Amino acid sequence: MAAPSQPTGGIPDPDQPGLWLVCPWPTTASFREVVRHFVRAYFWQLEGDTSAARQLAYFKGYQAALAAASTHELTYAASWRWHDELMRWIDICIAQFSSKRGAELPWSRVDSLQAVDGVQPVLLTGPVGVRA
Image 1 (cartoon, one colour):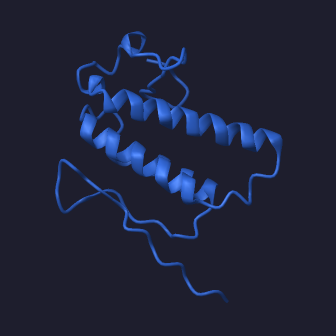
Image 2 (cartoon, rainbow, N blue to C red):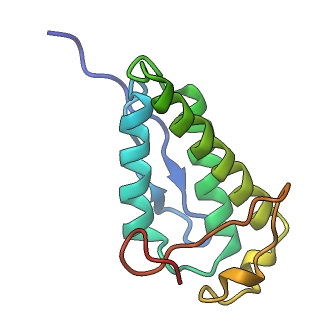
């Protein structure tokens, strides 16, 4: 039996010092495991949150965690397309929240978000897959 992996440091909450925005995850987590961990954290901590600082910390942490994650499970072209599209989507989110525009916009106004390189970001509210 392999020894358990040491956890990462997690992502601290910039608006609530001393609390986790995203709790630590194993350093040996695969790409899919990191996605699962961060999606779960998003729906528990950030869905509908208007703090640009919290959103930016989340997406920068997500980007770094995915970059460090093992991609051994991604064995098909479709898996790699998903990988590349997710990484691009995270880049768009970072650009959006870095500009601080995210804090000024109501979440229900998807059409008013800034497009990056011709790609229009879509924020989900309510059930997954339902556009605002």
